[in-house]
Length: 201
Image (cartoon, rainbow, N blue to C red; front, side, top):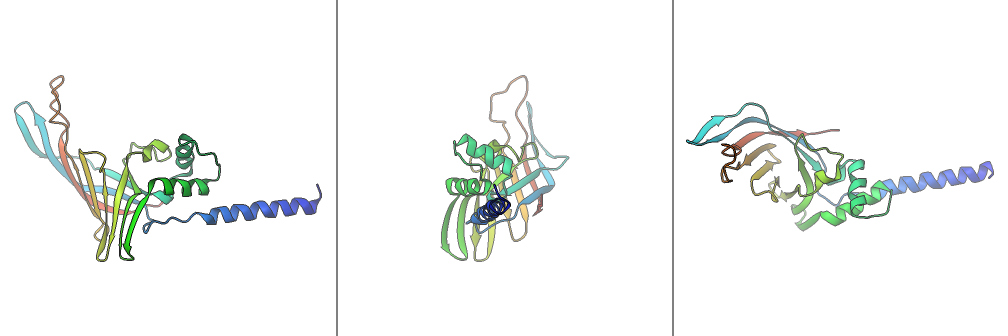
């Protein structure tokens, strides 16, 4: 193959790659990722003799990942599980967003979205596709503010972020209601309060 033909082929490949990258643009009205860390947490420890109100040590951490920022490795694994045959990550992102994100746009200032955000905890690997199954959040844009509400698929947990104040509230019901095993009276019931900040990877 002549040098001229090689140069043309290289140009076509680069043009295709550039166009491919430009093709995907999220339809979501949001885009940033957030790291959320609690400042205070407390609740009830469950014992045979009753429930003990207490403050808990340590911090609760959460990461809110926007659908357009899911790591390439996870996007490839998700689409492999869904049997999508493509290696173009940007094309796969577009397919994934179309598959899972639901948007209702009532006006420019009033939009609701399902699964434009995903919540994960520090033990969840961000590069694993399974991290983003059953962890989608509801996002709301109103004329006077925005909010994110997570764990709707888990009746024991609630996470709410007000995107104006960037304050969040997290609650976990615990498992006192479960059958007692080996003198264990269930996970503690807990509330946590903290602040979210933009998270750059």
